[in-house]
Length: 221
Image (cartoon, rainbow, N blue to C red):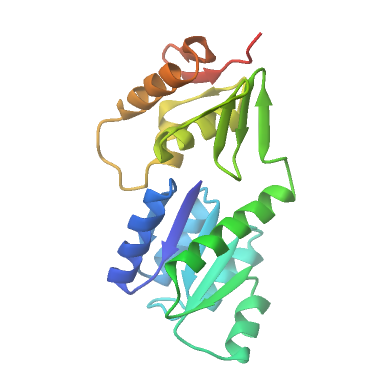
């Protein structure tokens, strides 16, 4: 899952990004409302964490502009304000949830997971079964046959991208985009490292390399 944080308090934004990255999300951070709108419009995000008081363009206007343009990405609004009017205004512009500063990080993560589950619940099932492989993207659990397989956060995120497009070729660039953040400038071959780890933990033939194109999750016979 790829998240965008639009928050002008840099220490808070970076702290949230660090914590959410440890949870297994790919996280991008911007500190300006206009840049946030541009990034949200151009990128493919599963959720936005959007502050209200922002330079350039406030969170209300960013949210309203996204909804007017037809973007249905879940939006969790953050604000230092505290009052029914502020919450109503945020929800009226199309926000899905609202959290007042200061807030508990545990509560933030719970709200994010609830919004992502709600979005998944409106569409496909969060449990994906491919032969003897079962991946629960909501609970973030993986089973091979009857045995549960322990994966790291990044391993799960790579597998998730392949599972969501099982049978299709997923390029290395697409995996990098969704599992690592926008600013990642390291070696793109890091994807190969995680695919190799998944093959060791699951089954060698489960993830096929399509030379020059990417990787494809095969359904077990």
